[in-house]
Length: 313
Image (cartoon, rainbow, N blue to C red; front, top):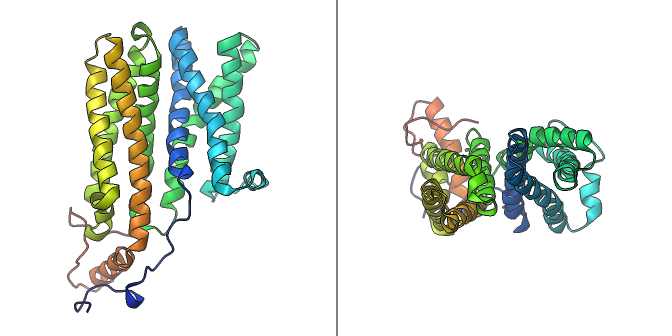
């Protein structure tokens, strides 16, 4: 029996449908983040004449641009469905904007890769690098806007912080991959990017957990999502420390960079699974709604955030 005043749903059934995306989608979030942050790194390295780092970062951006549509099409089931998303451009739709960003990013980094690896079309290739550096941050973060624009409590209630979490994680993982692939003498910028991105990611993830209401935040703390996120924090933190203290030791730099990269993947997977868990928990939807009603009517709130505020929206 439900205690008096406890938020409830019809016979305890979920209020909203759980996300139907396949496992390729969190993998796409990760791959797109690495690729999107690698493009500005490639341009910066090229500006500074660091050809070794520029080529590896540009190669990572190109690889991500190739893999990302494959993951999306695998989830959609048919290539035509991806092409259909390009028939119109709807600025109010994160999915529409994201599809165009991914397509433009792919063309841009391909031109940039031709310049870096073959020396062909140097001016057009440089323009492609600039375009990739502009579109890359959008590719890395639009997926956060996409999931936050749903009714899933664990995603929607974290809408103010989620794009910044994805951005920081993308910087860390792009830096980690570049650190692992680039000789130590040329990887100083990648190491700094890894450490800075990882530090920001850990802080922002903690902010999300503390800002959410008790019921919604449980999705990030408990069960398998919580396990994934704790493992992600551990790998990211340890990997960043190893990278920061590697001091030119190539094996340590590779191990640290790969740890940060794995941490970013587990973080995306944990966030994805937390969304599914919160969608299946009816009180995660009804509880905050009841809290907002109680707040407006001056009654005690049950699911207020840890800082005492009440979730809005």
